[in-house]
Image 1: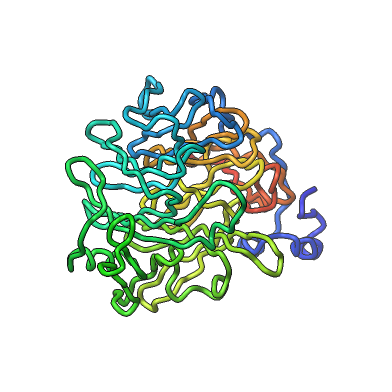
Image 2 (image 1 turned 90 degrees about the vertical axis):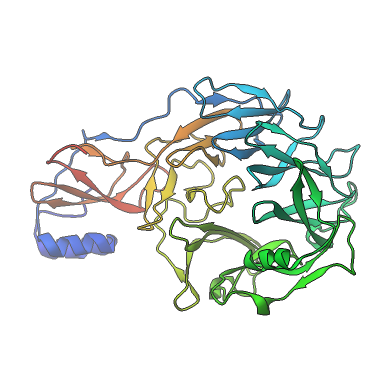
Length: 446
């Protein structure tokens, strides 16, 4: 039933307490008007038809893949790791050349010297991980760098063009449970020599400067086995005054300088940051353990670093589901996307200029926690669990005249003199009350 009655403004004001602030502003601007219902209006949203690809995952509930850049992915399939050039029209899988046999794709990954470095996971017979460098030029992997037994890579951080930092937990054993976050850490510097990844055997002032500029703080070893005499300790006093993030080698985690109150003194905080095209730093995703609720919670308010007052500024979040997971296949320079949790209906894209979320032009089929990955500047892939399907989605552009942006289950409307109607509570099936929407009735199609 419409929230507006034909009996006048008095009853209209009584019912308006259920509406959003935007609708109240609109009422004040245009005055009272009788309600109209446009039940036949179409939706601009495209229902996905055939999947973009079908992947034969070893475990359909846990699609395991890594982004190699330029629309190329390494997939862990039943027949072994495969390279998928998702941008190619042929859409074919090929053998991952020189990937070590018997090892699965693992995380994390990082851009490194005209390619990317990935982690080849350990196996029951080989309790150590290996680092693999993918070359963009040759489209193949190079000789692996085996890590010490019991090492588990937590983070990879580029340090200029030919160096990178690898931060790992040590002493891991397959067997009786031991709290992973209690294991000791070790950070080492690696470089690229003759198309091979190698640990650096000495330190230089240039390397120290590069690590400070990247935000690295804490102890950094020399060599994979550690060398206490040559180790470097980077303290916080040497950081640039406006540096908003710190990479702490003591826990292999990024930390926020001057964190907002919401994130002060929380346990097991993990953040995901993005560097926007204008150079500003945004933290849109984070998780931590809430001792009051005795559960892990997710960040609901993105924070943008304000270099002027050296503080994190909260920005409004109108995403369909404001609490989203950390997407490991998105790097700091990739687009900022959001997908609600269970049975999400849309992918949402953050405009880095306006900080407004735009939903995808395609509705997602019901799937348990879809997993996104970047395809190019405009499109993203969505891996569906339990189906083996991969979809391609893109942001919704302006709907045509007479079309809703999305299918609606709305509860109120505000007519606009001859131009359209604002629908209150416009949205989808699972969360229908998250935002108003304008239905255009006149004017040119967009």
